[in-house]
Length: 441
Image 1 (cartoon, one colour):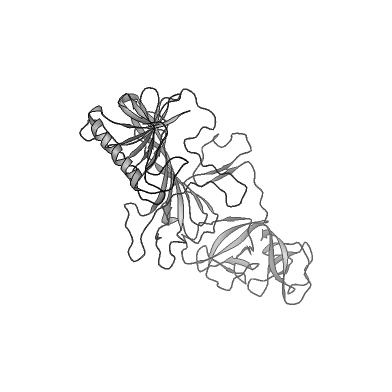
Image 2 (cartoon, one colour):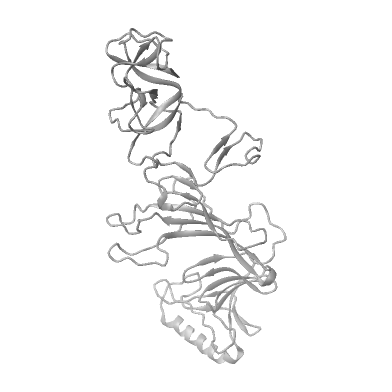
């Protein structure tokens, strides 16, 4: 194809234009610069002619030289209605492209669709917008508005889409209107019916975590903690005006929160990589579509089956016995309702302190007994238990009850017992055996 650059020149301005050409010719004679292209001197104009009131340069237009600061200027005529500075790239076969300023202080890159120029890219003071205009009658699979492509096999070759937010120093920050938002990706729709409706249906935000600053003292902005927030709208089914609501939150340390609790309600004490469901259920199905075949209650786990590696079921109980440890036999603290203490004479036996529960009940009981020490008491399964030979050597199958030492069990022939010995014990002092939890009176 042939690519021509043309400048719109009104016939009534031809005299001024020839003065311009004379000035450029003068520049050509007074500026001694090496040729940019063979046979083309710096500051020169080569070839051309008038077509439809426009002067076309069919070869080249040189401005200044490699060592000069001369630039190429295109000015609009404010006296002519609709006149804007424009640079047109003409393709006689496939339509024109042009670069033009708009009334909104934007620079528009436009293409000729056959029925007029349409915006393809807008560059403003604080935005860059890429557009595909017209009604799409057919869309190819994988068609994208923005593509980030990289070529090469080196480790450093990559395609990135970066969002930046710049601030000043910690001593002189540049305040922003939304200081906590680093960048937003919005998914928008436009409906031309009824005068046109613009809507944002979903968005993803990168935000600073609460209390963080872009220019934290001493960090130089290198370790700024951020989080990702995901927003969607409910389906109004033709009624109401749904708003964007946060549906998921990925904290700076990898905690994933599904739902919309306040960000500061997620404790930093939770381990990295935790999954939190706020006011929802967790349903694990095997492909049978059973998750919605009955009423489900928020806060519950529904599954076809479960498999737990560790081997006991326990329940949290509060205690004020600070010497209690895993493997101790425990009973009810008769002076404090629901509380437990190490077993002993006159203390109702209820179980053994679990070492590592496979399933722990009462995991939220810390709020009810805030400030109290909690211990997991085994209800079923196998657990290590502290024992002695006070009642004789222990054999497999012996029942283990309360000894004279708080929390330590022994072989018993009758009375309360916490369970059945799964291994023998013939040592001196106190040891540990595996116990099958089976409370008996």
